[in-house]
Length: 115
Length: 114
Image 1 (tube, rainbow over the protein chains, first blue to last red):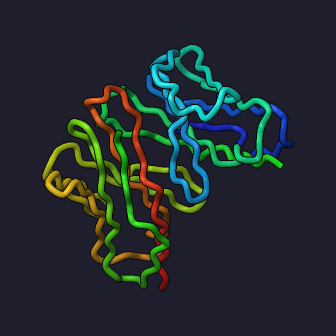
Image 2: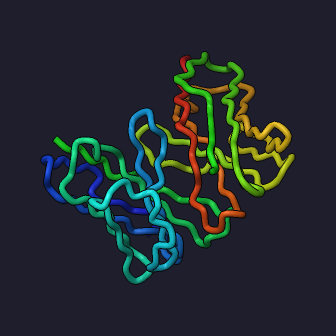
Image 3: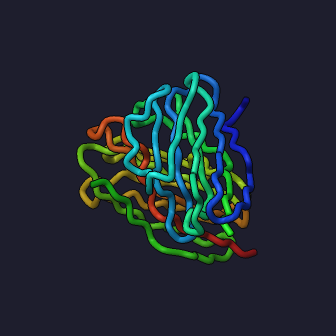
């Protein structure tokens, strides 16, 4: 596609349920990033993929969070046993290379609400 | 570690007013600096960037100069429009840390009124 695509755009779930958020990056982009945007907290880095490997998982807030990327393309962020504090907008971004000057292209995000 | 501090909002301006959003950073090595903008209902998009000291990034009438001596990258626009209403994020990427993801400030919400 022309841009980074994320789904679902909105997800409402009950506390304790598992959720999966999907990101389809721009074709050919090797680097993929997940961020979380909470009200008043700015953007919090979660995890980064170069190809299918994740050299930096330091931002995952707990072991309930995991992510994978297959075929160097689509990535899935999974949150198990969701808690109310997981409510946020989850943003995915990709870029062509890992060079630090490369622009990150963001999707529109997946808004997660945990009741 | 790397960090970005930007002025807290919200900022409310009248149309055609001058805009400054302050941004300072702490980083190891020689970071690249960015301003991203998030318009209502849209994803973040790059507004401008600067990759070395004294570089000036500019786009859509916005400017920011990479000041190494003051570790700053303030965003300015001479005459804002209603369509500039958005949330603005300052960010850095530090080459010395390898494939470090962008580190963002908390964002500054700008509202421009006619």
